[in-house]
Every structure is written in C-alpha cells, then in structure tokens.
Length: 102
Image 1 (spheres, rainbow, N blue to C red):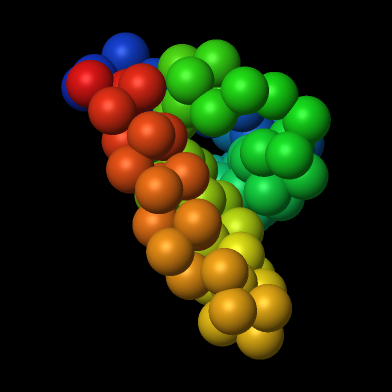
Image 2: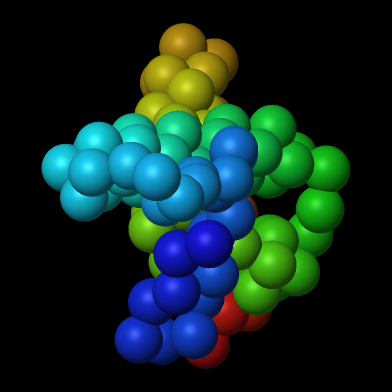
C-alpha cells in the first residue's frame, strides 16, 4: 500500500516481496507497483464517476484520482455541450456541482 500524508491509501495491484532480493530489485518492483496502483485507482475513478452522486464520489476517492477522473468526464461533457448547443445549461450544472462540494 501507498499512504499519503493526508491519509489517503492506494493499494498495490500485486504484493512486493523483499525476501532474498537486492534492494535495487525490490525497490524497482515497488516503483512499478506504485504506477500500477495509481493507474488502477484512476481507472476505477473514471468508471465509478457516472454511478455515484459527485459529492459521494469525491469523498470515496483519493484527491489525485478525483482531479484526473473528473477531467476525463468534464472534457467529454464539454464537447457534448458544445455540439448540442447546451453550454449555458452545462455551466449551470457545473456551478451547482461546485457549490455542492463547498
């Protein structure tokens, strides 16, 4: 697991064993698992975003995941609003989402 100073926890995808390994070997494995772990929680964040109210979703995910995953959906939603001519309605929705978090 990775632990942030803010108390957020991200699980490794696979456990890393240090037994009978050189430090360079297991530290590289830890680094790779850190990358895999962040990718995994970002994927989960993107997939779970439409399934939960945003206020709940933000509290259930680490900050980095919230920033990254919400931007994926924001980009798609802005493109749809531009294509459909509903930018004003989308702006109102974004304002409401922001106020819900404050």
